[in-house]
Image (tube, rainbow, N blue to C red; front, side, top):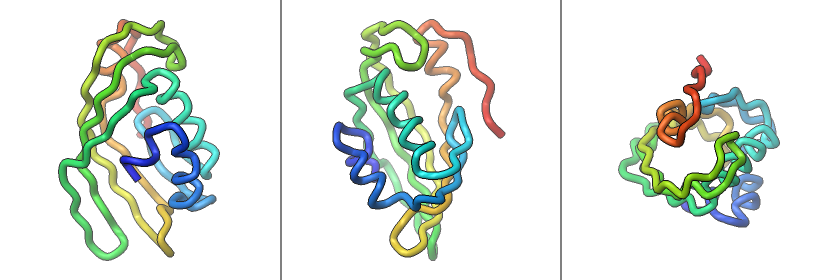
Length: 129
């Protein structure tokens, strides 16, 4: 998931591994369905087209998986409402997912999008609860 979704052509992996009726909480939005995730992915990749995600640790129990990850990227696009700065960024976060029949059906991401946007010169954003 983390290595394939965040590169060009990753839409196929999303469609394969994400349930069509997925629900989740991303840092800046609630996700209801696969298309919501695609929309969020396109925004993030539009700002950071060279995203690379390294999985640092995984814990699994039954149908639940928690992943601690690190993302590195260059801010070379404007899709998040901040003009491209060409700054290299590193972000650490965690994702908690529930899996049924080989697909992610629920998920929660935790990382600090507001701090990332502030470091690029944007005003902080409110977190989604």
